[in-house]
Image 1 (cartoon, rainbow, N blue to C red):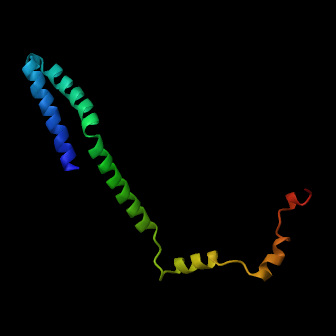
Image 2 (cartoon, rainbow, N blue to C red):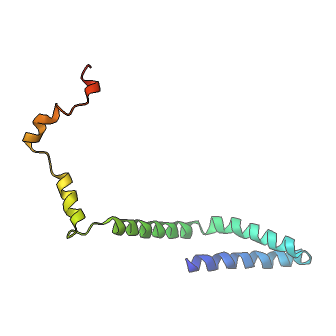
Image 3 (cartoon, one colour):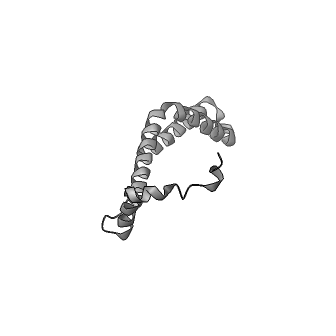
Length: 108
C-alpha cells in the first residue's frame, strides 16, 4: 500500500513538473489543479492492477477477521448448545408434528 501511495505521489509531481515546463508556472492554482486531475486519471489507468491486488488483500484480511470473530470455542457452553440444536429429531417427536401444524392451513 505504501508503494501504491508513493507511485501516486510521483505521478502527481511528474505532471506538476510537466505542466510547469509547459508554462503554467504563472498560475499556481491552475498548475496544481491540472496536475491533480491529470495524475488522478493516469493513476486510475496505470495503477489498476496494483489497486486490485491491494483490494483483494484487504478483503481477505477482513474475511479472516470475521471468521475468527464468529468462530466458537469447542469447550464453551455455546458450542454444546449449537450441537443440541443441530441434533436430528427423534422418531417419537415426529408423531406429534401433525398436532403442531398451523390451524390456518387445516382447511386447505
